[in-house]
Image (cartoon, rainbow, N blue to C red):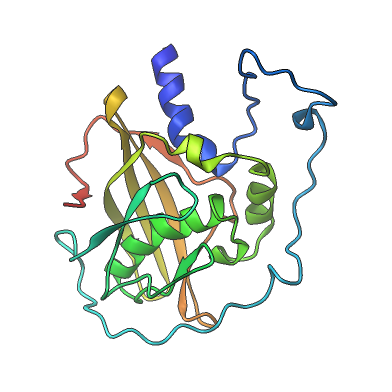
Amino acid sequence: MVILVVIVGLLTIPTGSNEAEEPDEGLNAEGPDPSAQPVEPEEPSETDGETPERCEDMDADDSFPTEAPEFTWEDFEGSGGFAVPVSEEHGPAVQEDGFWRCFSQTPSGAAFAAQILFLDFVVSREYEAAIDSPGAREILAQGEGDDPEEYYDGVLVRGFRIVDSSDEEATVQVWQSVPEMSADGAYELTLLWDEEANDWRLDLASGDAPFTMLDNTADFTEWR
């Protein structure tokens, strides 16, 4: 049971859990405990709230992927070497200032976008990676002061499962694992097509992305 709790913690904390963490031994904290202070949902600043430049239309294969599209691995900025799949055909076509974006309006584009927009939001704290909603603002506020490098140490992206997709909305499960613990789990992320940005965006209106431990990964497409 203790091992299971540790595994779930490693794979879910970046979404902004409300559970307090035990302080490390040897830490001599001074002043009031920040976790004891009420946290107000963070309002995007004028800079954070600016609409990103519209992405160029991407001419990409819009068929449902039966295997992983062609891709390469790239370390995501600020995550301590956490590698994610990227595609010349499906995106992200723009990788700047910790905000990786511009994906094809296809099922494959949604598969690439789900993991990367999630990192944009929880690692780079890029609010524009999600559709504006009270749920998204609350998650961003909860993650204040988190250390993404600590959370993603030893975690690998393994694969994806497209639960549902259309031109306007997609639901993608992102398979991640901690090989040292032989643990596998998946986030379920909903994406909406933002006409103004001409790009996918996370829908976090209902709060934290659902997470499930996996005993069987046969239904997932592996990145390999």
